[in-house]
Length: 94
Image (tube, rainbow, N blue to C red):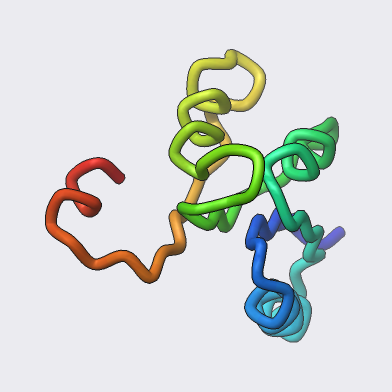
């Protein structure tokens, strides 16, 4: 059974490219384009990893990561943050 990766990215071309690459490497890619869609897709069986954009419609990726890490059921899911932001302050916040 392939490992499931949730890709949360509001820009469809980026999300589709990430999904394509993950599937080419044998992963099952599940896509979400905003905060609400991501919450709907984080269900059992939980994803093995989440690629999470920093800025999303409906809420930030940081907010979503904090929510997931505060929940006993989802805190163990690894999260990789994706962002085009490069300011030092943003790196510290992430």
